[in-house]
Image (cartoon, rainbow, N blue to C red; front, top):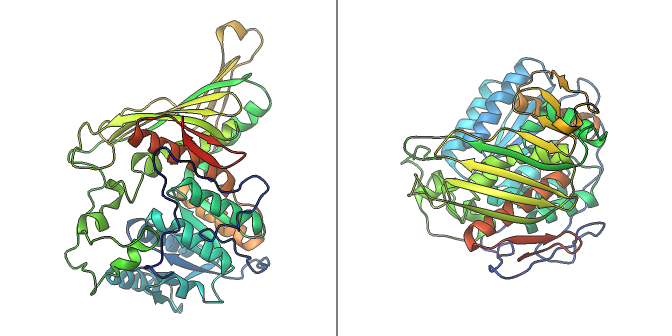
Length: 431
């Protein structure tokens, strides 16, 4: 993609509505959101090596690379990381060096442009760990090139981009797209989904969750490398990419999660971890109304908020409360309240406790769940599905519903209004 072309993201004014076809429709009519057709994919035989590309070699990308190489060395899956891509030459060189040194006999290509990596016919799949304003474009480009995708969270920056990815996958059901919300691998959420579907807590009426942490000086204050300079070690224009060109700011480049134009902050970077598996367990359909509030209470230098509170209403008669903070680490208990019983999910296990008036009708139960390293398990689930063509666990439909919450909550925070979403038309508007 030419970084000088207009942004693919539709920018909405605070009172405007936007629409992109959802449901059974495919949104190929909008030139900003073209729907590609991916080539067919065949399963790989046991032991046949999967060839992986990594797009984005910063903090998350290098973390994924190191962990994946550890899984490879442990023989947990037969794969090779054969290509890496980044707009920062320093990070790119280091990722290529690491991948080469830890994979004897594997030639690792290095690319500054993601489409050049995707043009390689020998690559089966890509892990995308770029800044989130690139997630949608890179994911759709990868699907178009016939590569299965692991896309870091949040899946996108906006509802429009999420619907674009959802419609792309609807048009290419043979492809696999894993969203990097690793808590989906915790068994307790699978158990909770089954118990709720079986009616064991009655109507699930209210749930709560949170992601809260603390720091003395502020959040996402990653180190600034003075060697990173546009035109020499950094392709800044390409980094800006779909968002449009901006004046270079080393603070923005190294600490983009702190800035409103480049990130939704706590909501997209932290809360999606907790909301995604909880929404999976509840299965209450589309979010239809979101209100959010908060402020800059401790980290006043950060443009994004350091404390937020969300109230999310769903189409199937349910309300979710979500708290997020980077200035206090005490969170809410993970809890699903039902008319007849409650599910406690704060530990590794799933515990059902009846409401007092239903104590004679509902038996309490605690299901002890297996222990996993969720991020490693999520990547292995993805690679297994790349190999077998089975469905992966963290899919685009759920991630799109989560992105509706993220986008509406972000708009609510900045406009002071409640925001609604009509899933039949794809319209979001202040209400």
